[in-house]
Image: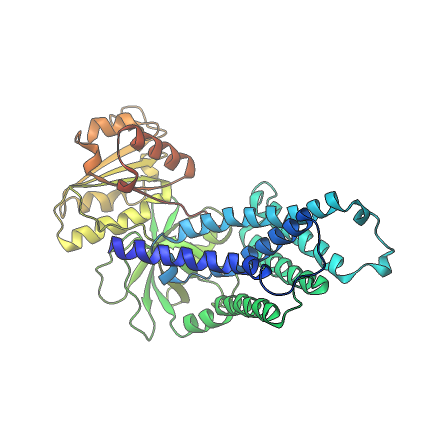
Amino acid sequence: MQLHYTVRGAVWVLIYLFFILAPLFALLIGSFPATRDFWTEFSAAIGYSGLAMMGLQFGLTARFRYVTAPWGEDVIYYFHRQISLIAVGLVVAHPLIMFAVQPELFTLPDYDELPWGAVFAFMSLLSLITLVVTALWRTKLKIGYETWHVTHIVLAVAAVTCGLLHMVAWGFYLADPWKRALWICLTILWIGLLLYVRIIKPLILLRRPYRVSEVRRERGDTTTLVMHPDGHPGFRFKPGQFGWLTVYGSPFKITGHPFSFSSSAEIADGQVEMSIRNLGDFTSAIDKAPVGKRVYLDGPYGAFTIGNPADMHVLIAGGIGITPMMSMIRTLADRGDRRPVILFYGSKDWESITFREDLETLRARLDLTTVHVLENAATGWTGERGFITAEMFTRHLPSHYADHEYFICGPDVMMDAIEKALKGLGVPLSKYHSERYSFA
């Protein structure tokens, strides 16, 4: 299975590179415009590359499970953010180089005489800069997730559309019919990806709704939604995976929200559970969802799942990062898997430990050891205090650390520290897995 995913991942990387580099190679074939200096040609080349990267962002966020499976959705979104910054850098460098080699461009004509190519270039650049600023500093600017998501999509479409119109308006490299055909095909591809995400996929989800069958309050200001498929068999998921949930509104609503499944993957009737902590915005209304309400689930996604052979599973959770771990633990219990499982669980205090009683009950069904680490421990607490550290691993784990399989989910700061600690213990990168839900 791992080899299959490796080969599939390599194929998709090659396809991605083809679509990025094809416009550049096309410039080298066929007729050329009047000879220009190297830096002008170089500026045009990186502009084309940046535009191709921008257009393919619609594909990276389209949630094609066959594409994302080798890496996991969180890795794809991380790549999306990083490659977007590279694309923006290329697009911004394009006019800067042009102004440097052709200073006369600073002398612009009157407003009513501005060439349309320049107008579209300015609009594309402005959309891109606004998109990056709102994405990187959304929290500091106090922009709500739903508002940001809608704005992000509008700005992305505007940036790519204006970039294409800028290219057509100047037309230096579109003299050959087949070159025009290349960009027409690329444009159709990008539009097709956008239509798939916003029209076709919602239509599919609309025909496969779920019903809320139970709303269960948990410790730690967390609510579990128990959902059953309505008129269809549902889907099977692997323990640790997640889905995109729409509770209030139809699948055509712009913003869905990603949550891990907290139920066992062995439940046969299609039932799924999601346990959601109140963190404001959308999550504050989850506990008000009425039983019987129709909701929509897009899933499953993610490569954060058990399956590889290991002598034991080490689960490391902080806060609501416990949800995928509960799915793993419940699944192992239902499967009768007797391999040892050690859960390091960081919480604020004893009363806020989500699933505290469930974990105690599950100890009777599998070889589970839970190490609670309390940030604000009460007087008399004899367990671990503070934050999860490498020293705690040495106290609670067998010394052959590299033989275990590690799963980490929680706040980014915690996960960074844990990954560093495992590396210091000699655990190879292939033995630990992280899930980060930073899709904004």
